[in-house]
Picture (cartoon, chains in turn yellow, purple):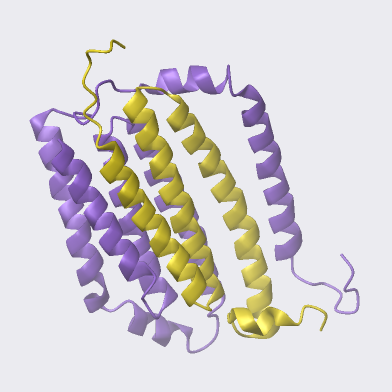
Length: 107
Length: 170
């Protein structure tokens, strides 16, 4: 990599768009009360973070961004497996997917 | 080539906005697939073709399928078939179909132009990623394996059917 190489990556606009995706996921997480929608929103936020990593990796011409993407992918897969198992159990026990219905964990 | 990047991210933002505003979870999942595919096209335009393939296979493939399974498992019963027919009518596929065909046109354009990864100075090849992953980040790989094992055991424990109703302790 030489200094004269012009970086064509749209870094700042791309990071802003990743931020927009993250904000959409955050809004979904805060507004929706359905547990499945909340988990989907967390996935959207993780995906936006992965996009930021890939973008930064491409900007610097380094492979580290894609390595971090792989770690985010593994974490998202583990999180979804456990989260969906909890949702399945709650949905069967409570008969609803409302997050507020799961307030009384002791019952 | 930046046009490919921007248009795919515009599709991603539009599809994500549709995801968080749908009433039925299955409709949101249709848009979520389109959103993930759009992000994959953005990765592709950034020269990260390995990450794009993994995004399609693992996110849009495996994770969304898990979501669909859970949505369908929670709706078992005699009325489920009728409800499913109502959910997945032809009209529901119009929005995701339009967004997905935009992505298809973008991909065909990029492939015919032969300028994959044109938005970056240097493409990062999968072998480079693998070498870095199993060299510098080897500890992270082992920790990720541990995390996946913990997720597997946790999901298995939570998801198993209650055989004895009296025994509530884990």
